[in-house]
Image (cartoon, rainbow, N blue to C red; front, side, top):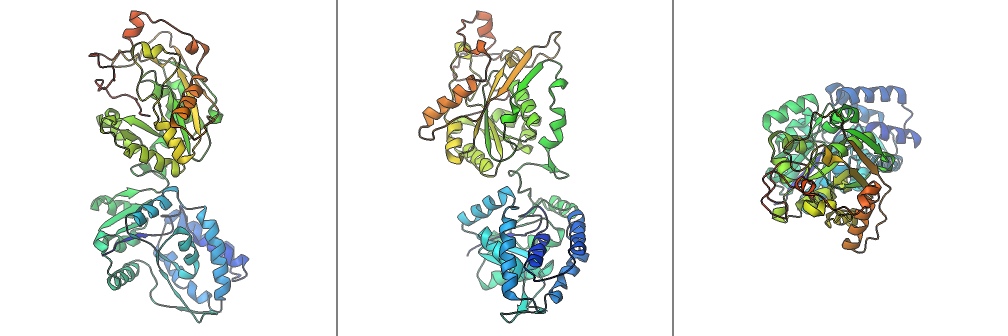
Length: 473
């Protein structure tokens, strides 16, 4: 038996209502001369209140206004609307649809909107089945009557169940995604219901039933509160002037793209690097998904927050490609990913080398996605939190200055992982102050500060199990 992956349309695949788009293109095609001001007022109520019986009653009787409309003209308007709506599809919606297809499930759109409107858009999305309200017509004009059920609430569920039975579809193995409490019947009819950008009532139902809650504009697991993710809420606190134990000199944030996929890479000197990166990215006003070692995510509080903010857990000991796949997925969704290509903080003499050595992971991300790689050079964080200490220096009379410089995208050639990794590391070094490129023979005291407490001589660094900000390349 096959299974379905059923998606609602409004506020699920796209962030708002599709109706204004359809209405505008119908008017431009001369299909209807309905007063747009009144219709747009109804849509504004929908945007604030979400799906509700009053709006659905208006949608139910909209078929009467379609009496005499040209089937060909409506199709032309719907095709134009589909092109516009594709620009409004949430970043992770298309990825999720394709994942279900690859898993052998039938992607399906289930919406109250008329099939005459949504058909071309469903084709663009790659849907193999559409459950939508059908309008009766003779092939030339619409009669002003429904052809079958008005697909809302329980009617939507009934339509899906009837079709599933006729086509030998296993609903117990199927998935359904919706934002509305009025789609609870549909969600209950499948084995894997998922609340997407849920209204207040559906949030309660989903919590009581332990259904997953997702937002298709952010990676799986990222929590949103009142429409904003935690990084957005916390951004006002990520201000350098609030740090009492350091001063920050941050420049070049204009090189961080304001939107779209990007890979921000930085050198690793201290567990305090994460603070410098957070302050810098906050100035760019963008959230980022960071790759961090498993110890970060296993820590009780920090780990939970890291997961809620979309961090990607890396367990280097397993050799798994899953973190890389998740990072690629985030970049394909238009996200920004931050990573330290060195993988861990250098220790001993390696900490003082003028040439930085990186792992291939960052280059692999760039080769797979063609996302721009933005170099960030960090200097001085070890003065706040040397690796030899379990906690940072919190009370200092003369806070050290930490410099952060963000450069232009690295000029990659996309032929050799090794060569592009070297280009990435050189670009990072170019953002460091001149003293970083001067050979330095460290003292015994300086060397001691590069090793963690209880260091046992393990040169790989795997013996250091303290939660920190190490990231894997």
